[in-house]
Amino acid sequence: MGKVAWGFTCSIDGFIAGPGHDMSWLSATEPSAPETTEQLAAEVGVIISGRAGYDAAIAQRDERDELTSAAYGGAWSGTEIILTHRPDELADDPSVVALNCDIREAVRRAQDIAGDRNIQIISADIARQALEHDLIDELQVFVAPVFLGDGIRIFDVPGGRQIDWELVEIYDHSPRSFGRAYRPKRRR
Image (cartoon, rainbow, N blue to C red; front, side, top):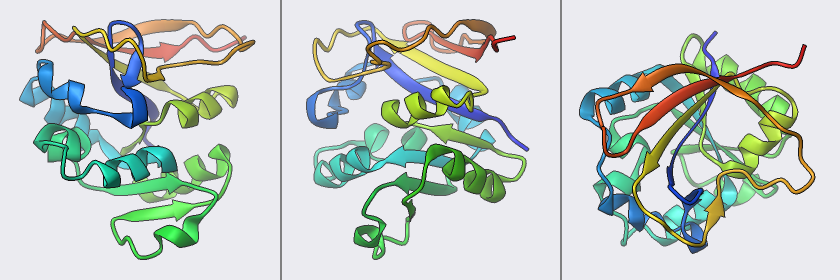
């Protein structure tokens, strides 16, 4: 069974998307090296994302470029699960599996689909829910040299608990947008 990873590129000031899930800022940053992108994309069997991000991607379809229009810049293929309270509204989109369930059930179903490949969570809110249940095995973070000033924060949980991480890998192929992988230090 693969691991459950939360992966994202963020701005230096801690945003994973601009206002309205805008991703155009990624085009101005240094892309990850092709070998890093290909490695990460090959490991992922299922992506779990949220409805707000899905809706924003559809609405911004004509504005997004090659880098931001598809997961891993188009290098990935697999199953995308969209968590939504209105799955029937996505029934006509054969590119996604729409589920109305909690994160534990979504991860269980994703593991059945992914087999030995990883599950990648790409939504801050869904990752927050997964962290509440200690479901995240790895954090894959790339920091782009840009300040967004506003948008969707990486992690915003007023009154939440502290989560400590330990370094497991350094992605050194893109020195301008440094990347790191961490695993959570599990509570004992």
